[in-house]
Image 1: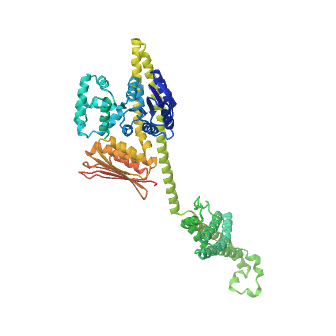
Image 2: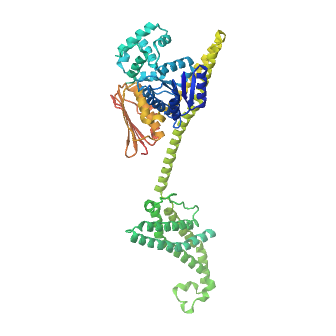
Image 3: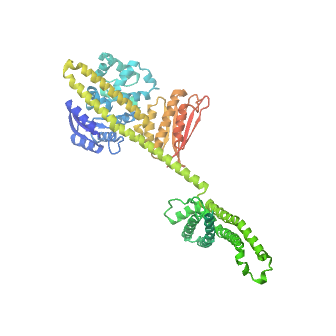
Length: 215
Length: 412
């Protein structure tokens, strides 16, 4: 995969390059600021941009703003993954707002689980979603009064949480040690309980779930 | 004793000299200011007069130092406005100006009376003391005058001199007492008044307290930044290295299984450490507060809250960091209390600024009320608000609703 990295801390930038190169990926550019990132994406047209949320000069959410700008500049919007030391549901909602998919929002901690991290990269590059479990937990906390969510069984809840993270059916089946068929069944049940249209396209389904949860 | 008496006399004799200067200044100044008040020269005339008055008052403080144990402190502000009219207004409003004027106005009559009294008493006593030496010089025709009766015979002269010697300490005491009284009166008027001292002290305390609070807020943000760029980044990097090592061991096959298991455990510890650091940082200073300000941070807070919170946040612009943090933690804590104790179904939060420079925060729920105003949670909130010179009130009748209302001064 061809990637562009935006990370201002040298230690982590080098770490990411090392990790991605070691796993057979191609880092086209590694920059340390929002404007440089926008320029690098314009030049290289990467398969994915990996962006630290906090970048100079303000060290606030420049990375997120740059990501939103990149996605507004190109059609189709280039896939981006925001990495952060902490996650905020609001930021996830802003990233997902354009409804195109191909976005990820992960804690930096997740990088240390290489297989899951690479999986998330592939998923997002293919137009899917990768949301940190902690963001999903925040989203769910918000719905504690939601009657429709209350109708889900605990198992359906688990499946929904993994769906919201962006996992495919087979990944969910693997994670929950379930047969793919029963995962399918849980999914169609929970979509029905949430009044969401059934569809076999994973990305579209994830989008629908996230739209529902962010509303 | 002799030295003190001499200094007192010195002080008293200098008095009328200063008094003449003061009289001239006051009369000329008042007349000049009154005449020029209607023209645009009023302010410069007032400034010139007060400047002269201040210089004279300064000399008076130095004169008083002849007899007072400590110097009289100067009451004037360290910095004055640059513009003439502003400076004139500033001086007119300053109590020291009018206290100086009062002293300079009474200076001439007061010092003349004191000096004359001291000189006459001392002169008469010294004259009587030296009577035997110069009694012969009385004109013969006046020896019958009743005033000179004490000098007509050597015996009477001796008695007079003895009486004068006996009274000399009293005369010296009078001189010292006059000087001390005058100097104390000068000190009373020329030092900063009680109101001014208290005002200055309060201003100083308010200033240093707000600086301390700002410094604390800045320090917390610095700690958050340092953790983010330092410890947290290093631990993430450590996790990446561990993960890569784990991956390389995989290639070695089952022989390395034990080492891989150890690395997996190490990685879990790394992630636990990161998790703890994250919680710590949130408690110190939520990053979203720095990123998005109070409005954004509250929106996120409400969105994550289990109860529906209806927000009404109207802030003209970003507040000082210390204030943002205080308001954020106040609201977060109040909402936590509501979910824990109030059995409420909804909460409402209002954040406003009033034109008089007050930030008001109100958190209301529809719970059953009866909250304890001295509970530890509320005491913590109260301390937080009071450190910023604010007030916190709780109304929680049995049956509800409970309202927490805070008012904190803020610069607009």
